[in-house]
Amino acid sequence: MTTSVTSLGRNGLHDWLLQRVTAVLLAVYFIFMAGWLVCNGGADYLTWKAFMGSACMQIANTLVFFSIAIHAWAGLWIVTTDYITRMQFGDSATRVRLLIQLVIAGLTLVYALWGLLMIWGGA
Amino acid sequence: MKVSIYRYNPETDKEPYMKEYELDTAGKNLMVLDVLNLLKEQDPTLGYRRSCREGVCGSDGMNMNGKNGLACVTALSEVAPGVFEGRKPLILRPLPGLPVVRDLVVDMTMFYNQYEKVQPYLQNNTPAPAIERLQSPEEREKIDGLYECILCACCSTSCPSFWWNPEKFLGPAALLQSYRFLADSRDTETDARLAKLDDPFSLFRCRGIMNCVSVCPKGLNPTRAIGHIRDMLLERGV
Ligand code: SF4
Ligand code: SF4
Ligand code: FES
Image 1 (cartoon, rainbow over the protein chains, first blue to last red):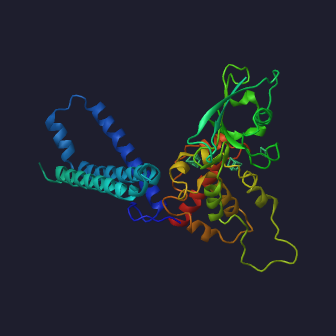
Image 2: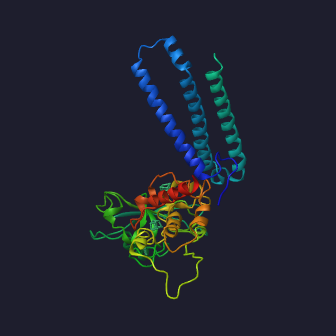
């Protein structure tokens, strides 16, 4: 059994489920948004602002931001553990991988917080 | 016809190289193993494994024009279009991803280590009956498509996830065997077995690429077995 401290969930099943659930959420959101844009082709800034400012959309956007963050982290964590291994980087593999994972985690965190600020900051 | 074979003898060669051979097959649609046997008469230094020459022992798994398979049951016409007709060379390499011992012979230790991890034997903690543990025909049917595996390693060595993490990801062959015992009505260690597969690597590194399915010389489907195990984990975990 191989455990990992940097993976997102408690175990492989948890990671796998999170990845699928967030993927479904994102798909539903983007299909809905595409539909909205098609139906409201000529929408101006004010319509857009009112639409995005509604409580429903604020909640949906929050969910989507978290989904993207979770999905990206789960996916990139897999990419780093596939390709940044001893085979390519020898003894420094763990250090290189940890460093890259930290950068990805940092960016993801900034991204999520920034998103929250945009949605709820009232700007 | 032209044959190009990966050659490497760690005692004399600095690095591996491809050696070209010329062979007259008299227009016969030989098996790749027959071709190797004929070439070995030309060049006795050529190294490869084989035993049963009929797809039963699993010794002569190799990479033929980019695809893994058993040399003894792969006819020249099945290797790739143009090979039998002599328009293209036959290209033989060892199974990818495992250390080369010599020429087409690979060191299977990593593959067997993963096999060992799934405890590929029946475990039952109830008292042994006087004669035998019975199975109904339906229960027996569940292990069809699983027990036939000959451990040739064609599947695991064609799986990118196994290439990248051969020590952490069990690989399709070991996972197929794992499911063979999870699906066996006589085995009582289902839960302990599942608990060992729950981490992010052992099973979940399978990305459903299905290379394993396309190369298995026995026509088995490791991806489906992996899917069944995942369903069992899901049922146990939520
Ligand atoms: S389906 Fe899974 S086990 Fe089979 S080749 Fe793909 S990743 Fe490997
Ligand atoms: S599943 Fe098929 S390819 Fe894989 S080891 Fe068994 S027989 Fe060989
Ligand atoms: S020689 Fe036994 S499987 Fe090919």
